[in-house]
Length: 357
Image 1 (tube, helix red, strand yellow):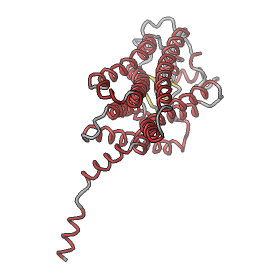
Image 2 (cartoon, one colour; image 1 turned 45 degrees about the vertical axis):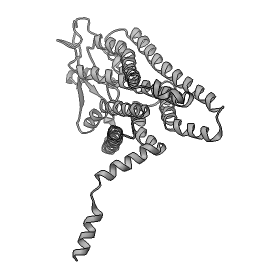
Image 3 (cartoon, one colour; image 1 turned 90 degrees about the vertical axis):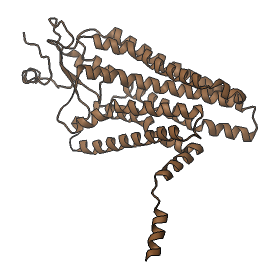
Image 4 (cartoon, one colour; image 1 turned 90 degrees about the horizontal axis):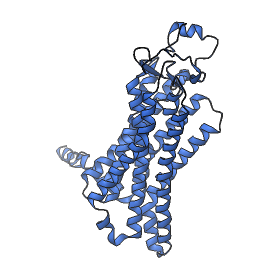
């Protein structure tokens, strides 16, 4: 009996000519003789399906995604540089914003460069260790980003509800502890489902029907029952979403109660303090809800689901620099000061030139 270990083998394609190669991959052939996950008989790499079926539109998608990635890198690097170099931005809020920008850069870098290379090649492949590394860091950074947004909500709560003790509460050790807790929470919610996927048996086919090594898409390729994996993955996803969501909501409920006791001037100042963060949180959780509902309710083609996932994963890192720059006067002024430092002294040169003539 012949087992098809790779989807790309000619004999496999010939034997499966009666069915589409992109049917649900969990119905693939199973081999009980495989003793290792990928060696000697397991799959040596995964093929990322991505958006390879778009034909002539592929290059358009490539340039759109490349432009988005450049804006994400440029905007977030600018925020990091400005916060680190401008002594006026030494408050805890900008410290957390700087860490959020670092997470956004790494978060998008785990997936977008690999997708861009897939647009330029006939077949986008990734090694098995690389696939699971990408899976782990993508989920871990996503959860860490939400945890940092939660920390920022707590920072806004202390600043508005307890302003007299703000500097004594949000000390540097406390800030570092909160950031370490955010990274630890992301690792805690990611490690169990990612390690379970790593230990499963993959004997073929090896096409991941997604833009990257998404945990649910890779799970379909497991040679065996994955019901426990699904329960564990869903449980930790709910822990990550509900914990951060409830804490953020609680912070803003307490902020709203405190604002109800303020006069109009103080209330407007408090709204300005929370506006940027509240906008980012609203966009993040609204888009996450839309993706969740569209995956389970709508009967969309795989390509549409991939586009929705890509837009969702890039939306918040793309908008964060713009939102904070537009809604935060101090940051906007600091960016102007930073840009003016790098601007060449064109005025004096032109004046000297005019006197010569």
